[in-house]
Amino acid sequence: MTSEGVSNCCGEAEEKEDDNEDMAMGCYDDDDDDDFSALTEGNPEWGSEDGVLGFNEGLSGEVKPRVLLMGLRRSGKSSIQKVVFHKMSPNETLFLESTNKICREDVSSSSFVSFQIWDFPGQIDFFDPTFDYEMIFRGTGALIFVIDSQDDYVEALSRLHLTVTRAYKVNPDIHFEVFIHKVDGLSDDHKIEKQGDIRRRASDDLADARLERIHLSFYLTSIYDHSIFEAFSKVVQKLIPQLPTLENLLNIFISNSGIEKAFLFDVVSKIYIATDSSPVDMQTYELCCDMIDVVIDISCIYGRCVQLRAAAQQSSSTAQQSKAGQAWPRPFHHQPAPTAQQSSSTAGQAKLRPLYHQLDPTGQVRLRPSTTSLLQQAWLRPFHHPG
Ligand SMILES: Nc1nc2c(ncn2[C@@H]2O[C@H](COP(=O)(O)OP(=O)(O)OP(=O)(O)O)[C@@H](O)[C@H]2O)c(=O)[nH]1
Image 1 (cartoon, rainbow, N blue to C red):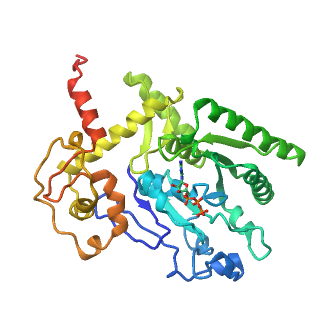
Image 2 (image 1 turned 180 degrees about the vertical axis):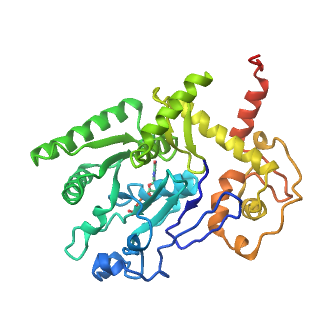
Image 3 (image 1 turned 30 degrees about the vertical axis):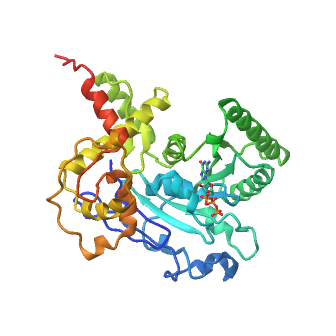
């Protein structure tokens, strides 16, 4: 399953010309001028009367569930969005500027994966009377509240409580997801301890407000490993009404094929939208993610990939190659020159870079070290034909 549509909130637009893949970028930047005032009632503090959204669009087209990313400033909201949906490398998030307006992103990977992500500025006070939070929460499927685990989380917890209780009153069907984020800096014991403490305090706050019925799900996440993809997978799965059917099909698939574990992946984001009912082992998930990279790398070498040269232009100035990554050097001659639109699509290049980032200035295709090592492992392993 490949991603057809992902929209970018930062004014970049890309179109991928491929038979089956279109990436439509919807932008909510200074150029848009729509109904955002309906939300903010013209409050310029939100920085977006020229910004973000068409709230009437539900009337004209399909209504997609919303996934809201909320939390205090610098908790990591935009980084999560960029790493998961734009393939930004985690280190690049160090240079992200603070978000000062709501950004909406359409993710339309397939008929199963279709939602909008709204990234809220940390400093936004959406309970200001001039801010129509009811309108936001009404169409929301999941609210992800991001807590920086490396910071003092007392303020974050009171903000979480306020957000959840308000949202629940407007829409009790929202799934409340708490990402205890940036856990890469913590030891395993410390992670568990933090999670327990945050869970206990959040539950106590809800109990004090006699709102025990609100269910919060907690995840330990970091953009520096696969935990953020796993957590997002679980969030997205809750928005897929066909999930039980998909799980059943995967159960049937593994019981009839002898395969140990099956995931149904959205290839580009590496979110898995369903798996069979056996428990998910993180290492298996990571291995599958790496194998997807291998397949993409190889299909990029042998498949039809009109944007490769555009990616090469981007990569040639940035790629730092390690010796281990120089497997399969291969001259690259047959790609058509990019159209003006393609070559101007910096968003497209950014997205392609992690997938194809192994093109050097001379046009040699080079695989990522992880791809090379996986291929080596696969080739060194004895092959037993089932027959
Ligand atoms: N160590 C670590 N740092 C992270 C992680 N995720 C994000 N960061 C860093 O946290 C800082 C803030 O990230 P942002 O994504 O800009 O935070 P934000 O919540 O969108 O901030 P606002 O736009 O101000 O609301 C950046 O320097 C990121 O590199 C993580 O998983 N681990």
